Image (tube, rainbow, N blue to C red; front, side, top):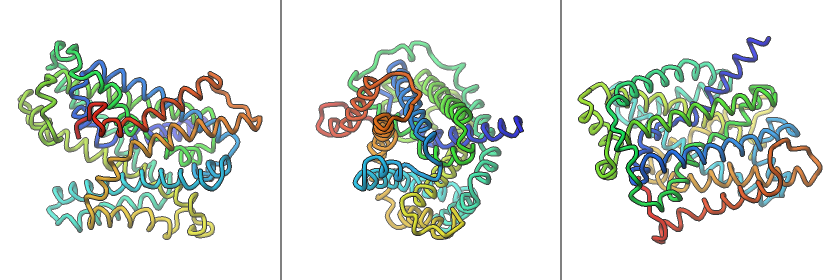
Length: 398
């Protein structure tokens, strides 16, 4: 039994890490190019600590609730219908934007591999991995167990080719714009927004507090290390002036290949992107089914938590957006950081405040001061994109 429990926990770790390590990780240095390596590293560490702590808040709340009660239900129970509506909109906009992007990128990947047109390729990709999602968390876990170790091996290979060629002077170069210390934080919040998978993880681990904490710790530590190492590899290989002129992942891949003289790096980056895309698609898709069932319980078939109504609502809107209105999901993704702040930072703080006011024991360090500090951080993060648009903060690339 102990070995089985450990196996399930490792499966939960891979689901959290696989969801977090999206294909956008490779292009993240483009957003941080003018910030420099050390400022970027401090931001990554700070946002990881914040995201990890707010995840622990959700786990404490779930000691008094079942995994079937999603974030929308928790918000409604604590603060009423308006809070439920706001959280529902934030989560669905966030996940539908990501799913549309994944369906689009997956279609492009299948088209390149099989030589099919984009439309049938996107439909094939969505249908294939949508079928895995319909089978539930255990099927997603099984597929993830096959993909995630390969993803890590490919990433390790990329680092092995790049890290020996970095220049320490590039890593110690000062940031070109100190204001980016704030501007890049919403990018990192989006990169660490794994919280939507927590209800599914809680279900899979039978809401065991100890195993859930262990899964969240390791499931977030792996992406943290990967983010830091990738930033080190890119910032150490490419000087800031040169990196700040790169505008796409394709240009970055070509430049890395040119600087290292290794033609396999481009192929490795493409392979890592495809694997990251798929593990993220599975994690977000699984979470979206649970969120839809929680937000609209009337559409779920009795006794079938992922019946066809839920699955069709999960897959059809994003694939339609990806095929018919490709610019729409770009707009959604532009605001994904704001949506992530609402549900992954502000919501858990408000839930913990209400739980404590009702006499529930919340076993976390810090008192009201910590909660107010996190609320203040969340409010600042919500303002950052608007301050950037007003020219009061520098804008990040991409």
